Length: 514
Image 1 (cartoon, rainbow, N blue to C red):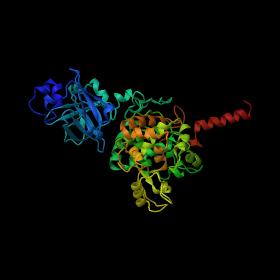
Image 2: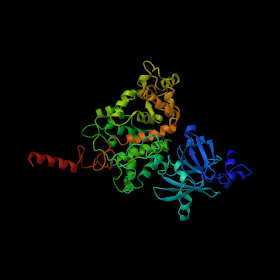
Image 3: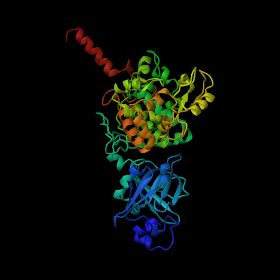
Image 4: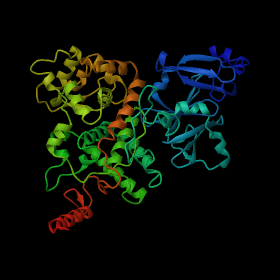
């Protein structure tokens, strides 16, 4: 084997490795580094004793989140596809052990011990507790042996490998989702912070994550539904959860505006279900509905195979919903071209890179025939691939057909960069999709994301953080709704009773000349 020349333990062995737990073939004193210039699958294995290294491709890592690195160099993984089972991989031998248990969130460190059976021990930062599982366990169980804590000390190199699942390590260095040295990270808005609920409700993020992972496992379409709900909220009046409000005597809510008629009812229900769980855990209305939307969107991306990124928290909820006209002007139709899309985005602080990255959310979800049938009838859009055109006409045989089709023809239920591959092959569903490749300003970004999923994931995390801070309410602005569908009791015409009373008093005082 190529690695024998680099490791004296391996040179002393006479046979090839067959078992992950064979001590001769554990990757002691090794670190693994990315080698982006050679592709997303390429890794550099460096012996920290000798300085010698070996370059190898490990394409199987595409299917996993890298959660941690054990103290002896084994990779601790979580499957990207539900149920996100835990796995242990020896990167040198390629030998993998799959566990029946689903990987827990917020893993800060991990260790592999034993041989028959093999045990995986993880330390979770949200609970400050150890958990253990063997390959046959259906779930991780609490591990109470105090002497086990030294097992999960974090080797320095492991911080290279926590960007997609852990809440520590590289994501602390890369604030919003794994950007490279040349990717500028967004400033956190005043009043928001990454640890806003640390004292108020320390398990808030874990509760949202657990709910979303379980719900998406049962209904993969919910991932796109929750992501879209966050988009439609932020682009209209800011990220204030106003899209969740039911209509009132003052008029219909945002949900009744044409662009929102196709939002998934199950996504609205999921947000209120999460609201209920958080209220029980936090003993009251502590976490805002707008923060729930931001977290649920991020966790939906993760649940469907996309990137992890940190979400600044501390938003407050608006007691007022926007008008139908505000919704129409804030949400450009799918027939929009790039110049008109950029006009809208620039008004809210987003740029061309954000437009292309956020459009990548169309890698999951469905599109209605009525949203793109102008590209089919009466004359086909000449920019559309003939094969793609034929497929769409079978789904939408006439204008006005009440049917839906996938947004991403290659991997419709996986959050990846295939959306951009579709655009390069003239298989974008909406005008607003395909024009990203046609337009000279955005085409180079599309081509880069089609080549590198990592570049897309990095920019997507940054752009989601930027979008998630549009016109946020913080501090004593707005309210924290007890029911995400209705403003709190005591709120009239968008003002809390205390604010309303003060307004009346001020007006009376002014009229009396005080």
